[in-house]
Image (cartoon, rainbow, N blue to C red):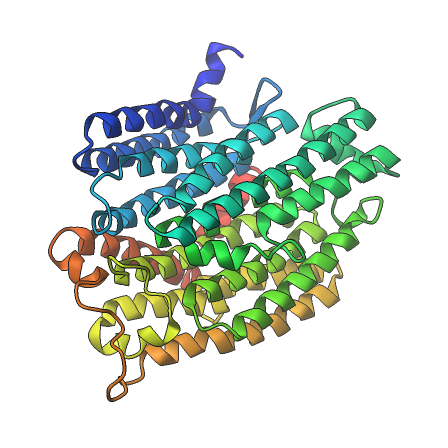
Length: 488
């Protein structure tokens, strides 16, 4: 690596140094987590600004470990900005629960660093390092509320599953290395495209698919998802649902999408089967749920199933389609969890769907933001989700994947039922003698006494704006993504 490579990895360097800085601030300011909160926002903002000088040098390979190209920069921008929003909505949430929460922001910045490394990995070595950084920070964040036994259990569950999935990935990488003689991801990708695959590469690919399936919570590796979503703090759940899965999706684009349906072997049809199963299982199970975080958990399984269509299709449409869909999914999911976080009280998250009854008459702006996010996740017109699903359908149709395209349409229709069920409950009048949607002293009331309302409100406004803007005027974002991912 030369001095000219330093600006290309400046965002990663700022995140790495910033994580240490946040930890030091948290250690010396134990009485209040405000200092660590502000420091984390400054670090994330500086890292986001550092993407511009990196863009000036792109595309560029920094040794054989990191590649800085348009897809990397777009993924890092999405990861860092999403982490910024998660930190923003976490302040009031943590203030209502713990006065010593500075370490939380250190873990958040560290997880963001791991996700950015994962998204920019050009080698299996950097891929594994980024994955372990992300996983180590995540299981600690999931179990952060130590007073809740369910959180500790969920953190331990994620630790075990992260270890198992990493073992599958690592063994698969080792087998691929034995066959190709290289740890570079591009070498394995070329082997996929040229085929036929050797036995070791085929076996290694199978192990890697299992590991990736666990990380993305695809069927049949999805069973951990609802329990983790339900037990983790609401802002952490937002991070797991977006940044964690988005980083792995970007790796999939870099690894598998160049080959597409023309690749040798059975792996495109394995992915197609996983895609179809994930759509159906996620949506069917969500229909039966009465807890909103578990509904969003099963919904995320279906959304990753939708996203797999672009991987199977491959070609020039794969990377731009995945990138745009990730932007729409991030915005809608973060908006939904922002509303849940703002409404959650000190005792626990507001999770029962029935507790949202008459929310529109009591907190109309929060209800409007949550409604818009749910409609986008459902893929209704004039929302970002509709454009994202339309592009996925187009990618499937252009690759003659008619079965997957039809399954996308059918499952999008199924999802409308459970999303609209939540929306309808928010706009129904309260039942006589029924429970209010929030107990006294709960989240939204607590935010009125400080700046929590303004922070959560700001995050909700940002996500709502993105959802509407990409649904009504998607062309500027599509043009930006195309110029970054396909070429300037």
